[in-house]
Length: 191
Image 1 (cartoon, rainbow, N blue to C red):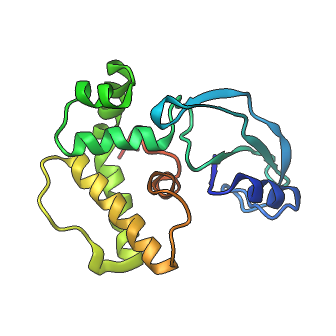
Image 2 (tube, rainbow, N blue to C red):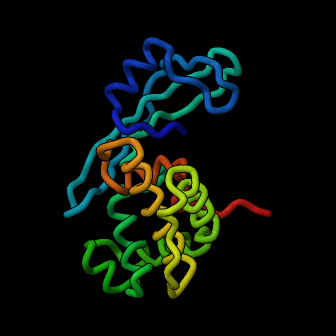
């Protein structure tokens, strides 16, 4: 999975073989499109997406080139899922969050469960990025749970990156998606 901020620019770079394989570093070439899927954004807007696929010319691995506003295998955008995680980090339960976002309670509950399971890993990613960008921006306030620590660290890393690079390249949750390599709701790695 390769997350990109601008799909059109990535498509051009892919056609010119300027994108590199995350596994071996070899040049990627276009290799068709992924299946069409529907994804819901904020305010219930439904998007039809069909991401590009790429194949490495060296190791022959295939990759999906995905817009950073989306998460792999999720029917909602990173912005919607991020709002749910942010609500939970602020101490809200899954029912009020689900009602506010117009998403089923079970779906929100599963997002929060996944977010809490991988919170320490997400916190680690956020803290490492903050330290790399601007160690003075490292969050130090007490938070009620590990998910709150993780969200605060990821947001701080994104803001520190924006400050270092100038103006923001994309919305907050798209940048967090790229920072976490699309693994915002993925299970935490073992070990």
